[in-house]
Length: 162
Image (cartoon, rainbow, N blue to C red):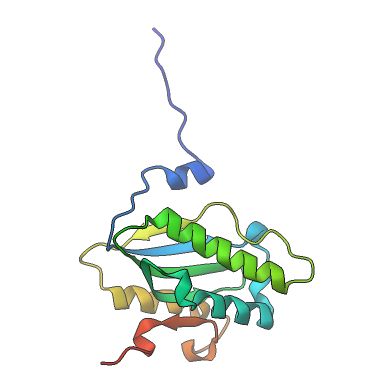
């Protein structure tokens, strides 16, 4: 008897398998620099990336709630809007930031790996708790001893009025 077997998904295909994009939901997203190159160890490059991430034109139908830029990857906490799927939001972020970085760098490498990782927050998850976890990454990685000492992060709650 021949039994058909299916090969399990691996790599980028596994990341895309079962991916859903729900309007008005919040997602934790991780994008990794190509070949884990520590591109953002350079202060000027990290500053440019930070400025580019905070540009309002990058977020026409989504809201960037929090982010942290690590030496070789980026974490985002994004609330989707009504019309754009998650894949389009991430594609725009990677494209716009890569273009800005290529203009800045003398010999621009490939900036981003093609895939990304995302996790949808559950309705019961506290968004501010997720943001605190995200911006504490440099502390857990041993890059600093206090969160406030790391310059490459932001959260909307720092600038919102009470």
